[in-house]
Image 1 (cartoon, rainbow, N blue to C red):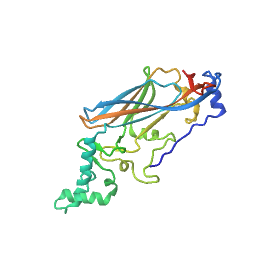
Image 2: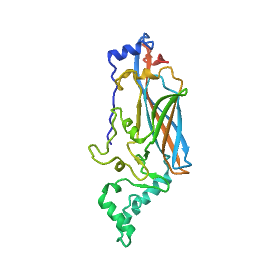
Image 3: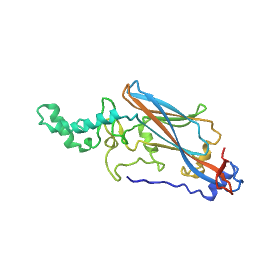
Image 4: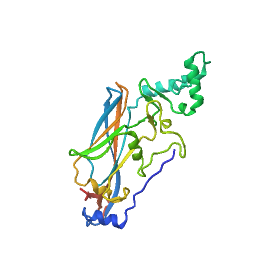
Length: 261
């Protein structure tokens, strides 16, 4: 496992912009980062589901990281494990036996022509994908506040530019030259279907003062549309990356109050 961490180091200009909006005159005031998960479950009733999550903590929020996946349970894991053993999860069962009919012959040709088809294990009947690689492709994403549209994407192609804060999609493995459809399994899932929505008041979307863009908003409604299987439960998650300004007690060293609200 490899863990990569992105640290925010505020510049003098960033800090001056923050000081103009918040009180930093309390002794030993410090700026700290944090992430909060807001999660909601939905049971699908069609092949495409739209679900909204209400996010309350928008103060000094730098952006939202949005994803959705089927609710994980032991039954799905065992079912997929049996499918991997049988070969049905990646279609290898069709080429294990001799191609005695046209269907088997076609399956053999598909695996030879496109070997990437077998790299992701998944079962379509119950929308089972390997845990960690089960994040759904989003076909639409909207963020609203008090009826105002803050962000809107109406297709997966638009959302490809939201999978990192560098306006590019996450490539797996690094440096591959495969088509987009080849980095997802049969259920339109993979391990990089995360959508990063930054907020900013400046042309530079990575500006630290982007957190000021959501200042004063009570709530934000994040609505996502993704492919589903009727009857299955799905989890929609919104990670709010935000900052707090806190003061430290000089005697005990405890964080005694927040001065960012």
